[in-house]
Length: 217
Image (cartoon, rainbow, N blue to C red; front, top):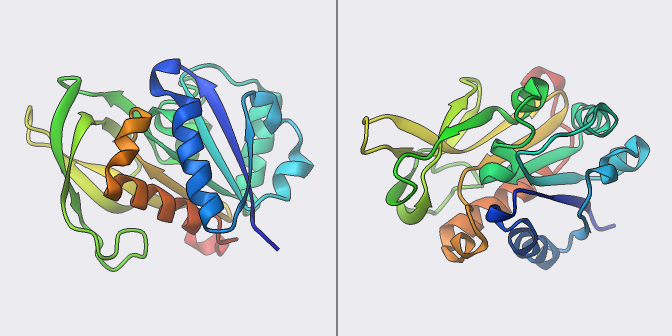
């Protein structure tokens, strides 16, 4: 039976939530996953439906989420449903919701210089998400973030403005759920960079694989 995915998209239109997640949906469908797309946070209200999923992809920059929408999402991921997202669609969603940020493992702070050219370095060459990839360049927003030190970091970038090295992609657990995040993907065109789409696709597939042992959280 095909794994089931719900993509919830919206929020700030500058991140092209529809166009970007259509690319992600096609990537998942190419791997045989059954993808549903929703343009409202009300899609998160039905906890029983969420618990039957393998993966939830959230792409909703900023905005506000009601407890009746957030709590089923938190409960589903704690119970073993995967969560994945990219850029501000997951890393800058629902700024007032600290438990959501804790689940994700990070929160956007700034993108110094706006659109800049920067290099992404692979730091875990053994992980299936980044295996076989070499350093590559992006011309986009370089995300400076608050990050959880418990994240399993897969790729990093270094800022010219202060020499700080910052995680770009990571995996973690929240309860029994697998969580994957990549800061790449400001607009849909960013996913034309093969490595950016590969990392995101592999990360989503990893998050959809199933429950993690509670001790891994």
